[in-house]
Image (cartoon, rainbow, N blue to C red; front, side):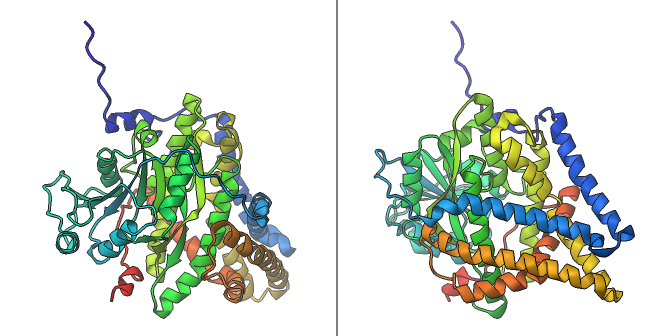
Length: 484
């Protein structure tokens, strides 16, 4: 009599699926694309020392041409949004849906986050607070607001007396990915949403997510559409101003890549997953700086290896607001982690670059991401060369370069103003998208916010090369302010 087959644990499945732990052979084309990007940068920078005329700024011209090409690609792919999307028939099924809120020392925002989830037009069957070793007043808040009794470490509480969907999973502090992995194994719903404690969902957000998964059985991961909130003070308003339009561009770009079945970037602050698919690929990577982004690569990889038609989407009707950095240092720290995690993930999945096995994802998206690793280096180098020309009094060279930059600003501005209407039609979002502020932001960004974003990316390079980065709690500036 044969013994029953043992079901592998989540950790065992992850060890078998992770390209970080089980490196895949890297095709020659993947290596050549990476080397070509590095050599091109070196050649363009060297020209600054021996070329004359505008050619001295070749690295800046290359940066502008690349960015404009991506803008053109996005414009082409979002063109269909100029027409109203056709109404969708109600889904035939209604999958069960649970929400995991991974939180570490978030006592100040737990109440409003949980209440917002409970008040959804289509509320979840489960709200599971994955408490990642909090040592603040979280326990007192959960007891006072919801009557929850503190469970033992590693245990899950009984349902909250006044809110039966709410449960409390208490864990030792181990980081967001470990908290999510512990929680997802206890959830029994078909769809699992991850929502950060600093993210507030619009009333119809969960309904939009549930419908998206119900209509498309092959959908395994989806991101909602986020808008940043940064607090009422001057610095917060300034950062919200720039980040609002940055988020618009980013989510339109995600829509563009989604149309080619090549979407990689979802927002773990508000993301939906088919639970079975996440378990199949081993859950979240505890060593990743951006566990949500890394997971999507594994889902795509497994779908290719197993011949599955899994898809990843951005759901325009699933809106949420998230507490975003409101000061230069907080912003730099966030972008350090984001870009460092992007570099990590790109390195672990470098065999996908230019690899036709992965279809458009391998032939288009992954090479673009390989080039994106150097984009901030190009941008800051170009700016440094321009400043050098001005400081040394070489205005005959600086003026033509400034004219090129002005032409680029005009292109960006045209796209931006045109795309705001498409974005509003797609998402239904109107607030905070006024034309006047958008105009000023587009003009000022290349000389301010864009440089700060690139500086955060360079710090991300340092984090990636040194391996020193963890999931840290940012100081909340907006959501807590609404409670005072």
